[in-house]
Amino acid sequence: MNVLKVSGKSNPNSVAGALTGVVKENGNVELQAIGAGALNQAIKSIAIARGYVAPTGIDLVCVPAFIDVEINGEERTAIKLLVTAK
Image (cartoon, rainbow, N blue to C red; front, side, top):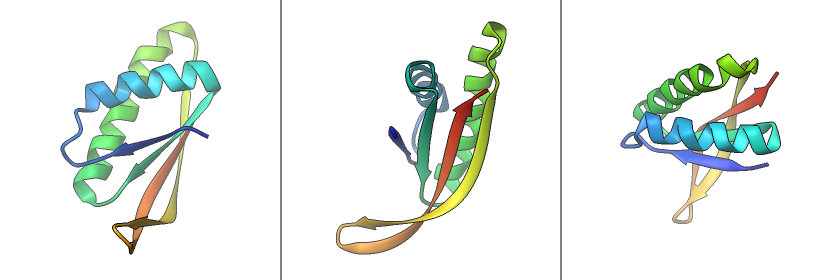
C-alpha cells in the first residue's frame, strides 16, 4: 500500500492532490501523521480530496488506526488514516 507521510507543515491542497492521484491509481492510500498539527493537515487533505473526486462519482472512506513507527532510532506512535475509494 502507498504511504503518504503528513507533517504539521504540509500543504493540505498538495497532499490532497497526491492522495487523489494515488487513490485513482490504486483504489486506496495510507496517510501517516504524528502529532496534532500533522493530523489536522491530513484530515483537511482528505476533505479537500473528497471534493476533487466526488463529481466523478467516487466517495472516499477514511478509517483511523494507531501504528508504531521508528524515527531516528526512536519508537513513536502515529495515526494512520486508511483512505479507500468507494
